[in-house]
Amino acid sequence: MRQFILTAVTNSSDLPEGVTLPDRIRALCKLGVRRIVLREKGMSDDDYRTIAEGFVSECRENCVIPVIAHRLDIAQSLGVSDVQVSMEELRSDPDAVKRFRRVGVSVHSVDEAREAESLGAYSVTAGHIFRTECKKGVPERGLEFLKDVADAVSTPVYAIGGIDLDVIDDVRRAGASGACLMSTMMNAPEEHIRDIVKICHDINRPVFRKECLELYAVTDSRWLRPGERIASKVEEAILGGATIIQLREKDADRESFLKDAEQCLAVCRSYGIPLIINDDVSIAIETGADGVHLGQDDESPSEVKKRFGGIVGVSAHDVGEAEKAYADGADYIGCGAVFSTSTKSDTRSLGVEGLRQIAERSKLPAVAIGGIDEKNILQLRDTGISGVAVVSAIFSKPDVQRAAEVLSGFTSAIIR
Image 1 (cartoon, one colour):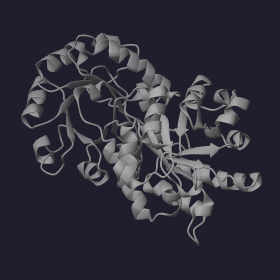
Image 2 (image 1 turned 180 degrees about the vertical axis):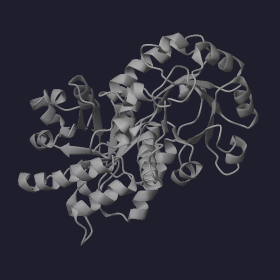
Image 3 (image 1 turned 120 degrees about the horizontal axis):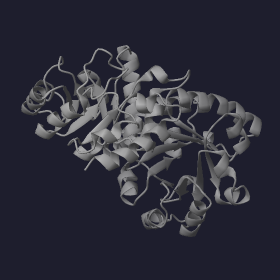
């Protein structure tokens, strides 16, 4: 997994005349920024809390990560799990790493980065990398400094300071796990921010290999609690070890499916994980998703590839269908249902031997699907598969990340 997360940092004093901070936050969420830090150093606690309430709600609605800076009591009261603090604040309150899921720390030296990591910080934000208006007269630390920090710690390193469209790829090449932009995010035209989002997506676009198929997570929104978005569960699955995501929402209308696809793509691009769209080629094309998965009743891979340049997977229930998928130009096959499954009650099970026959004779990488969970997954050892696809074994669980971690441990044992 190659992480590269685009973060906006707020500073309302940089906003153009007539634009409010809630307006800008709303726009950033819609434009596909992945993470927003509510900085606002000069704001009173009462005003900050008022802004923060709307900020958190807007971010969650759009599956953007809300980060509260410095004011940990407000973060805790709002149920925010991501905070940003200074090195001094972490030293004075080292237990913050126990109260919040992800504590980011601003650092200005390699030694500070190492200290933050030793205290349990989830990430460090290193700066400032380039010359910036908000720190006039302070020398830039440069890309070599960024590289030194990235080499010194294993935690994600986010770069900040003077970053814009023309240097984002340089920042990534220096080893950063993401870029934080403040002035640009506050006052640049929306088209410019859209271009920044696009280049971040492009530079972290995954390259398809059969290894991508190892833990194939297929979504199902039936288990979402009120207010949750499927994209947030997709992120949890990725953090737990999912290597590819298929957005499969059979009951969603097109508008809802498109919104979910856009949000899931933003998540997947942040981690360099392929996003596959189930059935709907037009959604895959419109969103720029990495691939599409077709059933036996859908159009052929060869027809799809005339207008779509991404990954094409096909469901195969026997050797003949697997051979046809190969002849039609598919990139992988999904074989199942291996065991009985609640998601497809009318499907006859292949069984382990049926799966083995298809996988061993297929010229394409084969992914097992159907009724697979932590109790039966080891039965798939030595069947010749390249991956395991699961739905309820991940997305029905109260802790999606932990469920994915457990299954990821098993897939590494059964897939060669």
